[in-house]
Length: 211
Image (cartoon, rainbow, N blue to C red; front, side, top):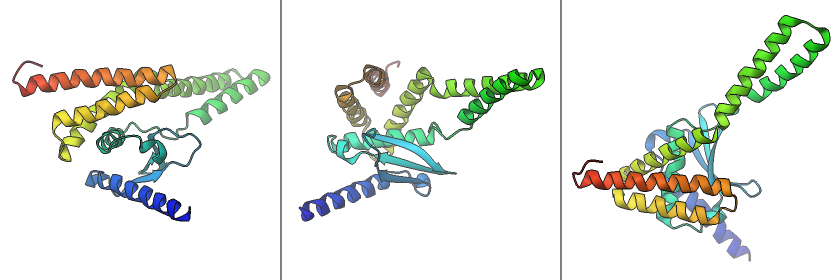
C-alpha cells in the first residue's frame, strides 16, 4: 500500500514538472503549477496568489482521464488566459459594495443627503464592476479567445495545426460528456462550435481559399 501511494505521488510530481516544461519561457518565473487541494475542484483553473504571481491548479485525479495531447491543449488554454490577462483577481468590489450598502443604510438613519448620494454611487460603481466581471457572455468570449491562443501555443511547441485542433476538440467533447450542469455544458458546446469554425477557416486558408 505504501509503495502504491509513493508511486502515485511520484507520478503526480512528474506530471506537474511536465506541465511546467510546457510554459512559455517568459512565464516560468511567475506562473506555478500545483495539484488542486479543494473539495471537488474544477479540472484545471488559474488564480492570482500574489502580486504578479499566478498559480495553475490541476485536479490530477480527473486529469488522468485525458490523453496526453488533450491535457497539453487544456493546459495551454489556461496559459492563454494568463497571457490574455483574463484571470479573476481579488478585487475591491465586494468590499466596496458592502461599505456602500452599510453607508447608505446609516445615512438614511441620520438623513445626510450628500453622504447618502456618495454611498449609493459607491454601490453603483462596485455593482457594475461585479456585473462586468461575472458576465457570462464576456467570459465565453474570453474562453474562445483563449482556445485560439492555445492552438497557437501548441504550434509553437511543435504541434501541427490539424493535430492541435483535434486534441483540443476531443478534450472539449469529453468535458461536455462529463458535465452534469446544463449551463456549464452549454459553454463547452459553444467553445467546441467556435473551435470547429476556426478549424474550417484554417483549413480553407491552407488550401488557398477565402476564409
